[in-house]
Image (cartoon, rainbow over all chains, first blue to last red; front, side, top):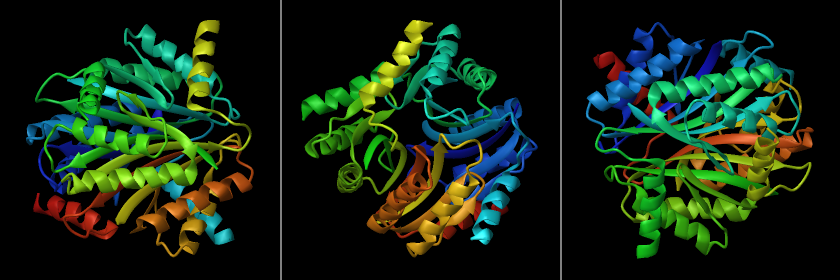
Length: 101
Length: 101
Length: 101
Length: 101
């Protein structure tokens, strides 16, 4: 089962700056062979369900290892059985509609 | 690694009524040995990371098998290494603060 | 326009314990005449769109005033035009399906 | 109060294709003078709290007017009082950390 997943990891108890932790998580996703798409409010990845969620788990482990005692994460995810769809397809589909006016 | 996870599964392409699918997912969580807490905007569970996420995956499979061609899910989840905390603890902690005024 | 809204406010930069802020936000919602439903992963309210969102804004103001320099919030919300539905209706609808087996 | 907000609007009861509604919402945000940033799992905007939330409300109205009887929306939002930060700052901050290795 393929999944498109949007990830926001918020470390709690390590001050106001969180970019160091988001970057570490980005590296975890890259090391897992995923192609993370960084945007202003999270990171989006796509791939096999188990591979993606193993990487999400690894993110939590790494952020805890970096010293964050608590993590609050928000995930949005989508699966579909009617057809294959990539992250790029999703953006293009909306952009096409925007051009049609 | 223990996790508290809040799950909202929204089937797309099967009309406006989604309670049938939420109930099926609830049964999946119960069958997995978790104790799902149903609230007005989702279902909260707690337990070992891998057990919880295996159940979330099973939810997606079951909802697709029921006929939903597309599923959009929102998950909020927390892990902490500083101390153990249950779903009940979280609610009690806020209720205590409310009583203190 | 009526809305059912689930709110999770996470103050950042004030340590690991967040229940004090969640309780303050709960009071804001109550003072706004809403009937907040506290659950293990957030607080759910329902009401007129503008009244609900004015209270959400007030929550952010109060949590900042309490000393949190940064807040990360996750909101899930639903509106519908086909029929009226309360928070209670949503839970009952799923519970009914669970009993039907 | 300035806010950075990430918006995912999911119309329910209008079939599996949702890009038409996401595009309409994008136009609402643009017409409100915001500069929506479209990514694979939502749209991010920044601006004054009231202006941003008025546009979010208008999105719901427009998507209902287009025929969606029900809408399920997920919002992630952040406010901070310690310093000004734009959507671009957030991405650059993570990218800088990634380059530092």
